[in-house]
Image (cartoon, rainbow over all chains, first blue to last red; front, top):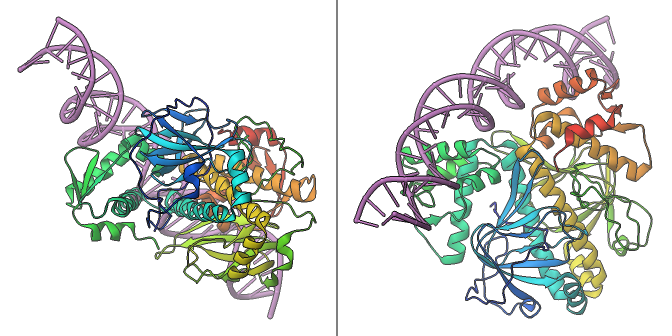
Length: 244
Length: 244
DNA sequence: CGCCAGATTGATACACATCAATTCTCGTGG
DNA sequence: CCACGAGAATTGATGTGTATCAATCTGGCG
């Protein structure tokens, strides 16, 4: 159980939004990967926005006046230091909330990893709605608490795991999420580049690449192109991911 | 200028949150560092419990049937791998909530770093109270969202900072928290051992010790006993903590 | 006084970063 | 249809920050 997901921070600046709508109706994920289609009280309150690959949804430091929910695509939350080091706090997919902060300004940026559609809510409107409809508040609370748990797992990974453990955890986590979203899938699709993986895992691109190659050499995974990976021996991967 | 904290970090300016002037929430993690007396709707619902130094409040994997709030002392949230590696996700002090999960089981253990008093709430009762009193829900949401932001800052620290940057951030953060709690203080009191610091910062005891000694040698900090540190040149420390 | 856990300091090892080429992929234009 | 270039990924050679192994020092306490 670990989840790549989690989020909390949002709002917007150069919202290249368009009033487009998309099919994407994938279930809301809740930390444990469950999914169900159900009338979501949020659905009526937001506006849909679309962002092209690598566009910034909002910058760290922007006024946090909007909350977001991912409809489709993958979003990354990240922060870059003055000297260019970057850390990705989370990859978010359909159903995940982000930007739900209590502070006046976002503390991380949100960027589109792939083409992304999100729902965008005015912070003030949501706050009114929560007052009117407490169950909405409970639901948000639940999502945030799951994201917090995910972040804690991520701390263990960054603070105490080796490169191959990190990769193993990452791949298993992705596999689990995709299984929850699409049902069993033999192949995991990596929406992000090796650099993104590295910045999420606290490694360098080279180490990510070498570690992936080593796993491939050992027959634990396989891939013909970098973005599409098969788990050949998930038990071996799980052994690597051990932790507890 | 960096802060493990959650307050709007980037622009260095402080969020002059409307209305109340907030005493800078600076927690190493977690939400409200304040201990001011104000009517807290939670106050009537809990029972007080006391734990001796190093006692476990709950174990990872225990059924999550209680929520907690720190009254006094310092609590650590941590997880240990099979082979003994430990990661501390947060140090919590007066006012901080913990155990507020949506899951059935705790995913991290909670332990008393010092002698600790907490308030303990039955999960179910809180959930009823939230239904009855939505403002309570908002308050919890706020605390969780701050804890999430803190966790995200901690990810940057673990994923991308060097040993001396981590120590600098840690010390500044502690200083800020203690300033907020007690007013200006020339000396910071470290409630935790070097091992605890190491497990929070993703380092070893030796590295923590060496880094502290190096800072002392340079005249940036000073300490006669390990648990009580003076910041002699906080600007130098801030330079080290850079990030952004 | 002597014990012991925590802290500090020292010597050495190693996992991962860094620097440096290739190689692969894919879009573009001739 | 294929050269061309550019960015991403991979692979290789080497460096280094921190871990690991190992004393020594310190302060509290029975």
